Length: 327
Image (cartoon, rainbow, N blue to C red):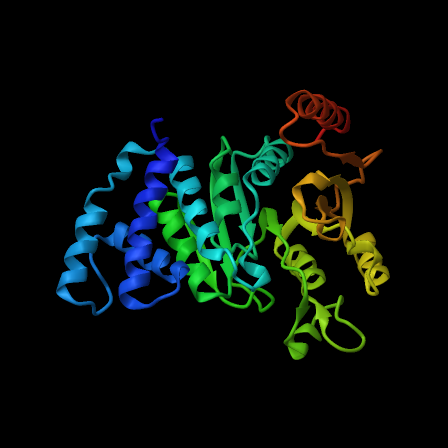
């Protein structure tokens, strides 16, 4: 059976990453980041022996990216990242599934189709898989921004965008610190869930905890609202228990003051190991002088993405909702 382009490119990236992993004793994921940089620059940047240098140059010269679509490059890199993250303990090292990224891209398109240019920001971009998957679906010109604190992930994000020839401005920083960024039209993010360790920085937020560490995912929602235009949209992947936690009342009160809840779409439970891990897509609009809440919020339980008929039915209903609500 003939390999697809995605499989073929993944296989080549995998060979390079494994070679670096074995020869330099790096974790696979760091080997991948170095391999992608080598593919982009065609020049080794680390001090490595001549034999390994020759092997790596030979392997990357065999990869001709001109024969690949952007989405094929993104998916091949995603497969390699997933391989590298198997067994990784860090929560932030999870990749947003393609089906969810595609659905978020569809929602961004529906919410911003009147815009000629879309300014898009992911404040927890990881390896930029979600961000570039959404950009690849948009028909308009985009000005894209991403932020990530992890040094390996930001390197993967940069190479991911460069190899797809997609222009993204990245911030390598703690995303809950201030940004040099003009307000954007839309924020998308698969929110990092957990506690934020920097209590001093957290104290600057309305959604800080009264005692102990604050929830990072709450602070990310507030930070995102700080950097989106009045009337702009925010699309988050959130844990289903977001509004039943011990700090949920404060979050609901904050959202009531600053945003309109546009919709909540529960992702299929079949996507998750258990109901405790289940997530939803949460859609907000930042309040502005001319904004109003929808007559009825968009609420739905999404069927399995594999069930084509059920998925088409729900998309019809969502399209009708957009038409009636005039977004």
